[in-house]
Length: 559
Image (cartoon, rainbow, N blue to C red; front, side, top):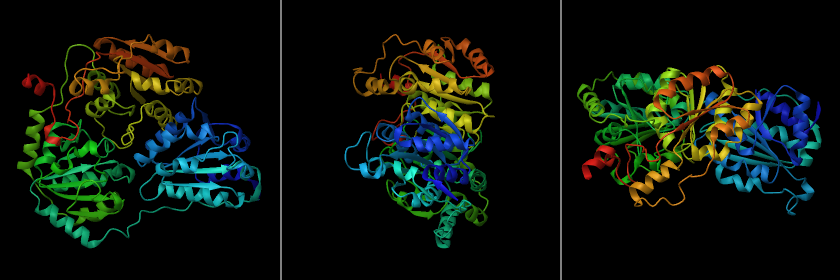
């Protein structure tokens, strides 16, 4: 059949099983919005800002494993997507961003709202396309979805000239191509070497990252860890890949990881890294990271091998497929002395916080109790993010959505809306700091307009908490531009934007406020007032070895 380019875009989205799109219209993309209106089958969520649309598409993708989709018009509409695209790129999230540009005859002439969005996003996309000919449009859209989903997932941008959306071409419906994990890179000799290393190890430690979640490898990971009887630590992106309630779980690794995870990696003789990329926030000082250990890395992306940490051996391939092949080759192991040592570290260095007054960790623990660990937790970036990682136990994958690689303040509320729309049966909570909430608080209006019952918990310390923590510890208490001493009232803001607002100032009020929020049935904001000098511990100073993690007790001893 003959369709316009705009109609072809919508038809291709239907082919791909897309049921929800997040976006904001404008002149260049009007033809696609008109085709979307006529189609009537794909739900469109009009966000308050294009960045909110990109984060919502990201949250939808992280919560489901499907491809998230967002729309924006040319010029500033397209550039407003860039932060969300970069966020998805750093965390390997499958997303397709569709923008439209001026017509072919106006390209390169500084036309109204013209920008080279493909050039701008080239460093932060897995691939991007410029479509000037309607005859290429269906092929490009299908290819974009395949690229976003295959191998190491990531965002893809399609920029379409306006005349390519109004011109017509023959459209023939196609079934989406099945994407199977590529096993060609999994070599038998690599598997055999890994088996020898694991069998010879007396102190193995597993470090798991977001790649295990992306590949759906949680069951295989559990079998692997239990079979070789190895403690498991995770990265921020790996939370939920291995249950935080399991006896072998040793917490998060790195700058704000547990002391027992950091000391476990420091003392292990084999570090098995599964779907993790060795971020600088994980390894601290690369020359002193896991000095006593051989490193075995399993990852789908060969570019991650030996990039930051030199490995002793590696297996390239989809994590789930690698573990499927590896598990039957392994012997049952018991490392009673080693696991007892890790347990002793857990007993010696538990996570703890001050008991007096309302604190971030207390709020997170109350959220865990109220949800019984069965919720999707989103966060912004900063102290509250680390507390959410430390004090909530994630037992399943795709239940902790956060900006790990880029560290995007303003990410969480949009992501929470996307996750709730994707998983309406789940309780979805965004944990924010007051600095982050200010970035995209306008998306509360979106949540109210569409009656999206997300719970926004603002841990409000009236400062930029994580930056202030650094200023306190390393900059002599010089609080340059980090004190938020204005008169903003977040409860009134929430109510003005159509949401319920509840202020919490005491520990005794948290449980009842959460109960009220969950029962409300619409979007609710909890403004939780905490002290401005509460800190995230443990902490590793920048550039230090991870075993140098310190906490408040260590600071007291120094004094």
